[in-house]
Image (cartoon, rainbow, N blue to C red; front, side, top):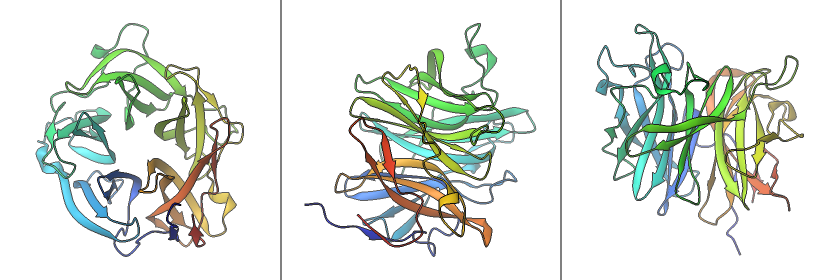
Length: 314
């Protein structure tokens, strides 16, 4: 029988004082957390920080695993270090973080780095070039001018895919992780809805596979910050939005303003959890870490009671 886990959001707010776009993974017997650190909007974020925990409740800061000092003034990745994630493949850890250079007019793009250890040292793989430029795409492909919020997913056949979002939607590409090069054309995963819907502006995607079904979580900041889901039976689609969307919305909890940009991970008991950031109505400038349980019905559709602010035991 799985050990009970009791928690209450926000998590470790005295240690994780302000974080957006949280990403958590279990490596060995230790949980690791990264995410966007403040300041968020003026381009001065110092890089990618890492925290660790044995129980998801008590967190210790490890420090920077990639610092913006690796960038030069003319580096395309000098500014805005957003939404880092870590993806393990073949014993190596691939770090993605989304950067840009406003002076050079290079829009948000994924910087990819690799390490033999989760806490570094990381080697940059595409320091010389952003992934998403016109020169790299076949005629007729969708060009992502701002390849934001990179998420990596490796399928059962060993192929790895990267998804990124733009104003035109969320798109998926096969990628050679060792060389940080895109392979072939894109697949649309989630497209913005028409005016009047909850998800006309989308980002923050995260793909998992459960029971043979591909599941893409995504966030929208159209109304506040909310999470929806899209499904497919093949990684190349077609992808279909859940009719119940949004599945995670602050409108369901008094005192909550935002609840979005989530990741999915398994805990030590094998339970699926989601991590996301929340903002409270009385403190909209502070982003806090939240956790909740994720379940699936008989057709592998997502079930969750997130977001929550009261005590939970799972």
